[in-house]
Length: 196
Ligand code: GTP
Ligand code: MG
Image (cartoon, rainbow, N blue to C red; front, side, top):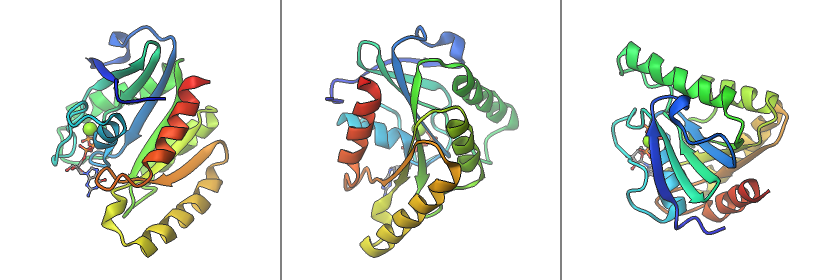
């Protein structure tokens, strides 16, 4: 599947304002600053499709992109960022959990974690939720360029081991938007999810 022609569809503050819940959707979730928006840009070969930022909490809305008619990618608001006002945080955590619980077209969840500190609390919660709901998961250990090849490999193997605890359909890969390491694996998994 060619991801390059992906276009922006809409930004929604809650699930009522999303496109009709049919077709197939893959959502990108993870802590603020984990590299969700960067990964979407890398995948689609577009510099500014999803807005990225050095400031955590940049993506506060559910952003919808279309690869093909009825085949969508979703950039979810990041979680776990302490410094935003509580009211804002609550609003977007509600949007996130609502999306995950109610969206029928959700066919796969990409959970992005900084390779230097994977499986933080909320990451684990999300993994438990996804496997319990029979949603396949792709864990991406992002910013892999931050570690040397040896450390990277060790972390990947440990993370794969740790993923077994959650049961269900969980695949773990490393990824870097900078060096494009892991990009072929991401493309393969997302193509599989979108086309079946
Ligand atoms: P929120 O929208 O706040 O939830 O963040 P996000 O998960 O969308 O992260 P974003 O893609 O905006 O990236 C956050 C920061 O990490 C930016 O400064 C990016 O340039 C940087 N970054 C993202 N991916 C990589 C990567 O693969 N390698 C390195 N070195 N930096 C990265
Ligand atoms: Mg973002």
